[in-house]
Image 1 (tube, rainbow, N blue to C red):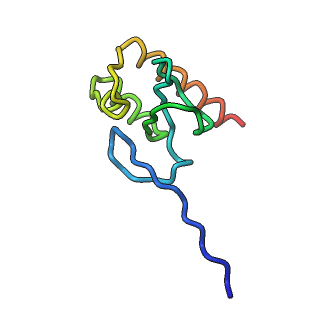
Image 2: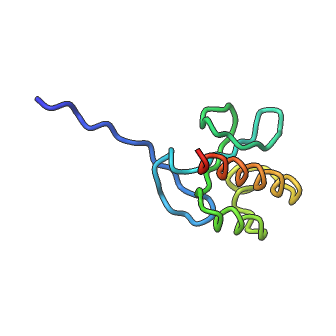
Length: 98
């Protein structure tokens, strides 16, 4: 009897609304302390939202779409969003270099 096929968890990008495997998306977390951070591990405690790894989705969110704030159920300032986007793009570039 063959082993059952294990399902991969699916998540939806809050900006473009495409459904993908969880590992293919970036997770942004609202921590219990109220801080908004990028979660590369995907396991940090707090309310999470997911973004596509492509720059278009990240830049679209920077252009005031507000979907990340809605997904986190918390107000996100433009300064927080800019810092978050910079951190995500920097870490994505580092991952591409490896």
